[in-house]
Amino acid sequence: MSIDIVKLANSGLFIWFRPAAFPKKAGDILMTKKPGTLVKAGDFDASPEFHFRQPLNPKSDIFLRSLGDAGGLERTALMVGRILPGGESFVYHSHENDEEFLYILSGRARIEIDDQIMDIAAGDFVGFPTPSVAHHLTNPFDDELVYLMGGERGSLDVAHFPRLGKKAVRTSEGFFFVDDDAFQPFDVVAAFPDGIPKSMLPAEDPLTDGPGDDTDSLADRIAASVLESLGTGRDDDKLKTARNAVQTVLANHNI
Image (tube, rainbow, N blue to C red; front, side, top):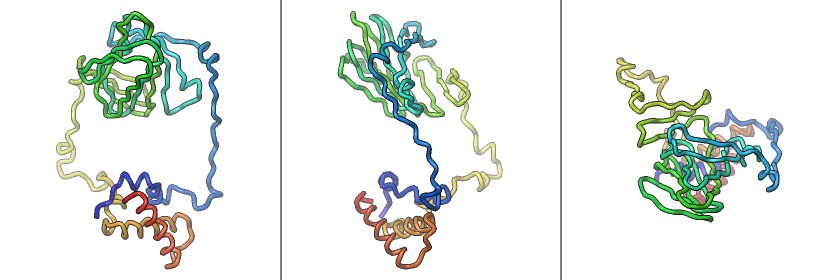
């Protein structure tokens, strides 16, 4: 039977396939925990608001407050946006890596998603898993629009602007606009006329390249890796106990 890698990863057992990256005993673990941050409504309302206009859209006109920064979030961008009547958010775009969402707090909006236009109002939520379809939010109505928007702060993302023939690339060095025509594919065959060196090929993965792919052999390999990581030795009784525990977890996750 084949192994469902997603279910295996969700089971929590996947970490044992990289024993060298983990401490041998609990005492080796050194973790500095970061405090939670409470942001009171009054404090956030009094926080500074910044005005933003997307350079690629002359109609872009939005006022933003960063709730994520106020709460000390480092991997999640979370902002409250305010768009006056007749204004627009950013520009019709999509993302390759960073998921996004928006939740309407007050007012109404018009949203375009993958060339489909619809009106949304307070209480409506829209999510954009990646790679996402293109989307854009506007306020053609008479009342101010206020909404919560959020997304990931990955180290690398590519945004597409399909109607403008451009991309935006975000790296650790900054945010760059690039014309679609400037993207050139890397010719691997031309780069390695004598064949790609084995050292540059993907390493063997114990999940897919181990001996056999049935549940029993997978349980054996996970159990052996668990014992090695814990430094407890690998006698038959310990291996049997670990294997039984692993098989129970695999069964509970239908792997």
